[in-house]
Length: 424
Image (tube, rainbow, N blue to C red; front, side):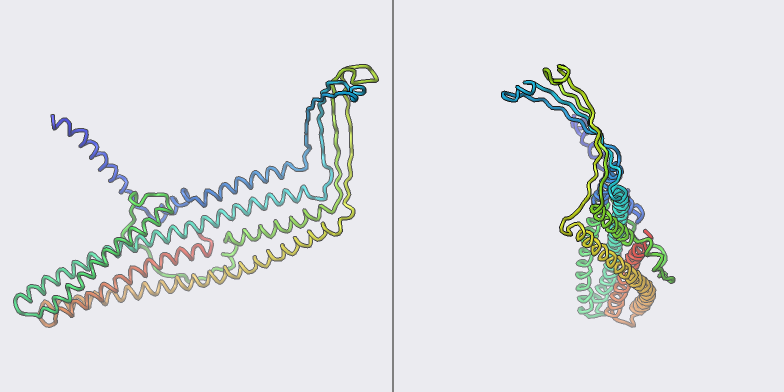
């Protein structure tokens, strides 16, 4: 009976184990992380809603200038003395068709504004995508950096443990002093603390990446190394990059919108010509007094011309105000172009510096490994003390850590450079 009762519990445990294993099977690549971020980011979803709103605004603008049809229904009840002239109860219905023939170009300009506004929202979403991709890739390489630091900390602890055992044996045999062993013990304690910090660093870095990708911290892992070349950038891209930057596209569209707004305001100073046709029908006892009928139908045609004459310069000053706003927007566009060109050069320099740092860090690690090997051989031969091996291990650990940071820094600067030249 006990065995039978345990079966459901075992099934639950096995199911949970398989689920956890399946969740841990997702090992993110930089490409997959970027794809998930684009799919799940709230700012991008908000940007898409703004695009949909701009599309609706465009459809509304393109409806301007087309004939409009309006209808109305009304019922009336009159008391004396109005009943001497009107029926006590009366109904009325009307249908009005209006077509604007000329409005000073406001219809055409409103449509152009709507087109430019939609383009601006598309460029804004593209900018948001670039920012999300840069944050995601930065967070991704920070996780990889932190994981490599954990691996390094474990290797370093193993080295110290081996040295500690060797020194303990030498001390027990009376071949070395206790202070050499104590120095290694102190370094072991520090190494354990660094391992704890590295693991905490992985946790925090994964939380940041999880927030960007929409995954839970325990639902994914990343690779344990930083592959690829670290050659830097040789050619310079500035002018062609300006055309790919969404910021330039956004501000260019904003300038265009301001110019069109100026024309719209200028249209308020021009006449408006429109045609209207009104069909009506009224119902009530003897409402048609000429024929003695209870209903009356008819049609009214109307042409209207509205001409702005004098408003103390109000409309004119609105045009002037908008012109100054347009000029200010153009200045902002020029300044943004200059800042982007400066940003590209700075990021390019940073990327090339990172390439040099990687090369130097690799060279330093090779030298530190050789230094450690020589000291270990001499320690085994009894020609150097344990402190010499300990110092060599510390140098190796620092060189290894510097190489990890240099590689991760290169990848982050590489992502910044791609964003700077509009290559995401």
